[in-house]
Length: 500
Image (cartoon, rainbow, N blue to C red):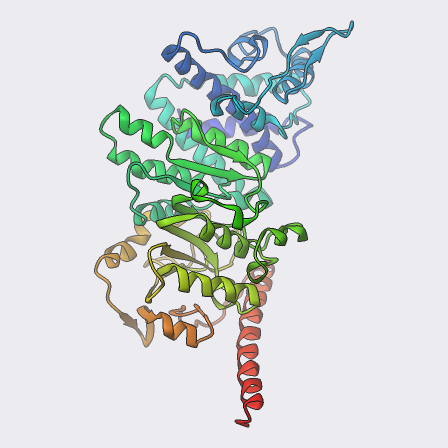
């Protein structure tokens, strides 16, 4: 199966439908169809293993039953999808003209197994955008051609799904759900997963970190008992309905029998209420930054950690939910490193005083290009002891690259210099600039917890697109404001102590 051929065929059909407006709707439309196809394939496996298995989906709404009815097309298909399939999968009963129930909506309670409950959660906010039943039937037929019993074809579809996730970045704001695979693979590799550990991502988006963790830990599997440990090793939370559906489908494609993915907001619980049962051995995350939450969310955090920046709040959640001796790798923007507002300072103080922040990898500015120019960093820390020193490594652009781009994205091999350095750390100076260096925790404290060290050499400014230029100027202004505030604070303290 050709990846490009499948995606192109679907795109060409949907473009003829008047109900589809733009790439974001096209992808969302395709994903709920894919979910039902993938879920039906998993149910066939579950039925093979358990002859008493009962689907949560009523028989008339199971993929295998209504898709195989080729007479179900045009207006008849639209009527079924809009007035029977979607209401039932959203948990609503479908009634006849006489008021009697024709099809019961699916029901979920506290005792419903995860692998069944995910159906209702997945369709809670799903939509059918297509208005032409003939085109809808054509799309469904293309998807139905996928044979998940064919191992080769099943693996090929994994590539197709990865392509779909990448296309999210081209669909405007949906790009926030996707972290480049090279980055998630690197972080999962360096965190060194161990069988039996439980890993979490509290804003998991499409599940990139979860799948990279699974790919790493499955290298250690030798028997069925190990497989069971893998199946229970990941936990995700995603508050937005569309990426949640993407993530569930992603987990099913990666052979997760019971995807433990919650459709919720990780920030809506008092961090002081977390117990040991709420904590994890490993956290891998790219927290949303620059996002917006209701002002009431701050009430779930201690006053000194309450922030209006979502990345700050997630850092607090991570610290409160990391087990003793647990490990974490987190992507954060430069603004976190040099920020000196009260919340950021308190978070960084807690990070250094309670956790062992041992490594910061400074990534090139175009890792997430062309969708954002914000420069990011990977912070590695563990819950073993207070920080004594922090190693920095500046990852430069690979030879022959001026920028990463959609056609030339970052690849795992580009992290090879870091991987080679990781277990044999040495300070490196290039052209008078620190590329790798160790700083003591005391040095960082004396610098007012400014973690903005081992930065990139200043280059001659180039002409950028207007939106990237504005974003760069905003980031630079924030940096300069921080420096000015530091100088003013120093002068004021000298005035108060009569040194001036």
